[in-house]
Image (cartoon, each protein chain N blue to C red):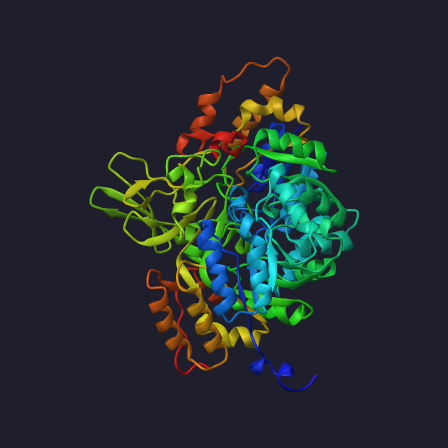
Length: 324
Length: 313
């Protein structure tokens, strides 16, 4: 199985290449990709340089152009595709049907991966897109159990890639407008979720209150660490009961199931976290590499990894059917 | 072309009733559609379960009766497919839907397309259509009507209508907005259950479970595996702009309020027999439980309400 590592910056890409990634994924510095955060991503020049570096080490570079084209500004997304192809990207990670059609038409030889943002959650859906647009690999949404990943992978006429570590979308990817409901900025259109520009923290007595736009997403008592206000991991009140209605502040850790994924025929394992630094990528890559060795024992570095996780707690998400 | 059809300002807006997003028990569901058939001024009625396949059997028995009554009342009927399809049971359900040819299908995702083999279909608001090239892809496959995602701003709607005139564009115009769908059932979980052991508990909340912030602001609502907005999206103030943009249909999404009255208000505003503000006032009497919003249409946070000023066109 290939190991696909995040690269939010040229430095992180360098690190991922040096640390043993088979491929890295990254995006341009604008709303054409789903991690459009300040200080992240690549200019054209940077991408060209880093692709050369990665290729010199035998590592592939996958370019995510995986938001949905804004009507009237399609040219921005089409240009991103043209440039990524011109600069030698090994694959494009796409979600928008119109952009898939454009790419298949203009760059038939460019390898196309289906982004998780496309929300293709079953074999018929993926097979249709393979037939229509020549998709070579589909990144699966985090809505499937391990058994469903295995069954789907057997059935589809392309490779599959799954997330194994990092941030967890509680909602199906590419079909969530929670962020735009609160802030006007959406993952699908602007490439941001719960954007920092709309985050505020305020003191209220002993409490620290975290807010997104006009909404309180959590209140933290004295001594409680204040987390980032991501809506699906916020604390709310329903019928007078307070709690994490959707999910606790946890992140995904499916590393215990690498063997199952391997046997299922999954082609690639994806690490989330283009916003994370070198230490994170290094640790995760090292641990996955270790576990993929024949006869590797379980969990020696579990604590190290957990400390790097959001809220320092992890879940297997939908891979474990009971999570639902 | 001559006459009214050529002048966008005079174009008639069709009213479509979207599928019931919530789990209503069999009697309530059937009686609702009987009344819609007999009394509501609507052009098209979309029926079927889009949120959770576990609910499908609740209405299977009444389906024929309901569609027949709607047809007899002169309504066009579409059958909606699930928005999230993972289990093999769900794939079969989608194929079954594709197998019938009495009614047009409104797709909730793309898995059904090969089975339709080029037959005309409609596209529901959970399919990601953000631009004209995407409309063109779907049109080539047979899409005739597309209800765009609720988060799209007017500026995008306009561009899409201009560049892809072959497809009738419909816009989400009334109801709590479907914002997200998950493999996890937050609704069952809130009641101490899980998706697998849910006991159809979401049926006890026919308008969803309100989710407030810890500071008491109304925010969201749980509807099984779906999360909807806490506010009711109301596009009454925007009808003239939608019409001018080239939108052909307004979608009303069923809530527990009197939907016959809702349709009446939208029809009256669409036909300029009632101004938008008066329409909104009447609507708040029909659905007093909900605050209204339309921020998405203005590229603003979706929960905001942007009122049309009196001197606007």
